[in-house]
Image (cartoon, rainbow, N blue to C red):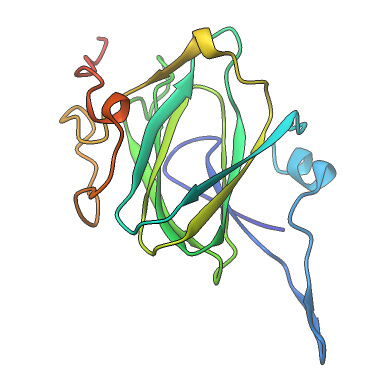
Length: 178
């Protein structure tokens, strides 16, 4: 596993370290020891799939509030997505900053995202499927989100969503705490 730091502490892009031969390649996509060696204590509690039949589908920006945050490793296993992470950790030097990456079945990259960060994505191809390895259980009463186009973050999306649910479209403005 190859870890690349982003502009947000604890958010890293993970690429496969491939071992190739005439059959193709072999790569480790999850290794608790390698994650820990790179500063990520991570235990898989559950795995989730998100299937999106249309290009231009937006999901997010979601997070789970304390005391049960939602660390995750996100990978697109079919299709292609524009994946976004926002740092919502008060006191963080990158509070309200965001990072993005294109994740696809072809590039096989993933994001590791710590608790306290919001996550969402826009599908760039139809039939995009996203796998989430979750480090905490889902607690419905702690589920929260911020609006995908909130000016507090000024995310540069590649296009406006064609499909978005009412909840994600109508989160209230996020007011930056000072």
